[in-house]
Length: 367
Image (cartoon, rainbow, N blue to C red; front, side):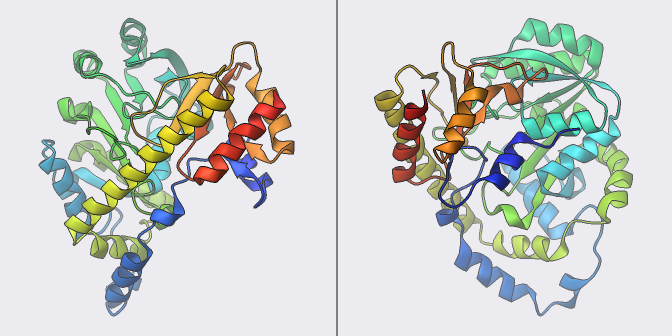
């Protein structure tokens, strides 16, 4: 099995390279001082350094559950399993459903696709339209697989968001077939206008809802979670315990302490949204100025901008761009068969305004 193209790219570039490749948050928005303060408060407690329970410390699970409940999705701490990043949550689920058929969007998240391949899940791609998957094709596929993986909010890589009607239709299909939805939701808090209602809220006994603090706080804490029916989570605990016993206790206690000030976290989230919206708008302006032939949809949230060139192999183009010290992810990486196409995913959150303009100019010079 080949490694992730994105991870290989990130390891091959240097400090002089402008990277639109990885889904990296802006480092200037990390609440460094607040995390320092939270860290110093926990270290007098010996329990911080001890083995913990496999599903995560109770106080942190309670705080995550309360956020769901306040948004109209009744949840308690026993519905939450803390994972070592959302990526581990994905791996646990893939191991649980090993060798099954699974319906996914195309294009879809490369990290999930690699995990599915590793665990021998047979992926059935359904075309992603502007407002969600093709419903008829999804229904046809799901009748066979009874299992689906979707990213309804600011999807990675396409940045598209499912409309309310398609969310309702998908929930109904899953309920009628008594199947399972894996709903990946790392970007749902990064909205520019409003937060959408999850699909899982309509089918709580037929869904695993994945969340993460990597995109909203700091990635290095490596804290994610799975929200599911308590009986469903029990099935995952054996896998979790066999992987790492429990996620990092120090990270959990730091995060739990930080989240005690809910207003501070909400202000932090709004600061991220405001910054990313400015970056997204600026990225679009520079594309229109220097690459008018690149067709795209303006993001409404999240971390990515997606579009395509007509008649250009974006995989071949990125090889030229690497020589000019600018990188992105070619769209064929997000498809099951990886056939070359003109599509590109850009990350706009990590770069400065100056880097965005210069990077797009460099891509123009490679055409």
